[in-house]
Length: 135
Image (cartoon, rainbow, N blue to C red; front, side, top):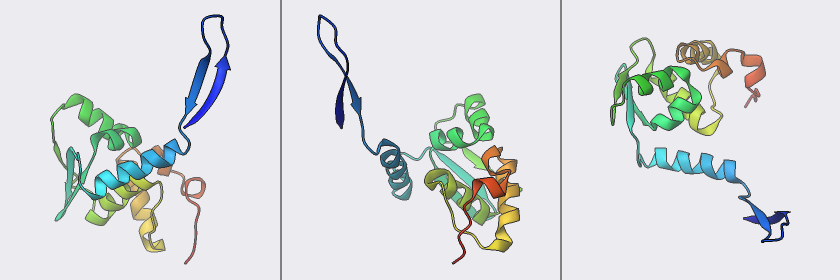
């Protein structure tokens, strides 16, 4: 934590508390929760694949999921994504939690279409969203 005085009044000083690396801490915490399947509260099913996740993360990244969870307040919904492939759903969930994924060139178009079907508008323009790194 970083302590910093913001304002001084006659009564007492006010302080602003700042958590250094808060965003990276939250990202890492959610990823750890996902990896350990701790507090997961939704299951996405497609093909023969099931992917468990947290509704709050999916909702923050996708208006599609936000609408589903708002309209259907189940404790642990199982959502069947019949038009998507297992690897696409897993990659999209990984992207939501980590902010990056690694895919081969042949998968990019399919992955972007899958993300668009889940209303992830940030993935609509590939050139501006991804930093392309060739291994």
